Image (cartoon, rainbow, N blue to C red):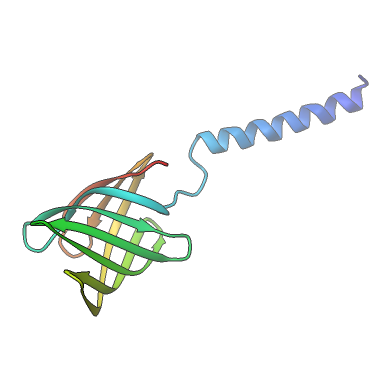
Amino acid sequence: MNLRNSRCLSSVCVVVGLAGIAAVSGCAKKTVVGKWSGTLPGPGKMSLPGTVEFKDDGTANLVVSAMGATATATGTYKYEDDTLTETLTSMTVAGQTRNMTETMSAKVVLDGDSMTLTSATTGKSYTVKRETK
């Protein structure tokens, strides 16, 4: 191998190595896209087991259970600068659907497969876990 080829190979190794370090060190953009489960805040001091799914297209689906009933909600979300803003536009409980517009905002801390959300209005925090396939 001549000196020129050796330098070229060294440069490629450095670039690949730096890319690997960037990926491992968390420089990759974190995302809320996926399905998350845990205990979600309910009305008043209630907490409800539930699942929320954030899709690539900016839509969100929420499913919670309480007292033997299941409620589903749909809407949209935006995740930017560690802040999640979700607007629910419809909710179905016991087969009855109602249209609504309820917007919530929370500060988000992503740590691996855990997401901690702190409500902008109440200051309450809760943590959900990413469901893996």
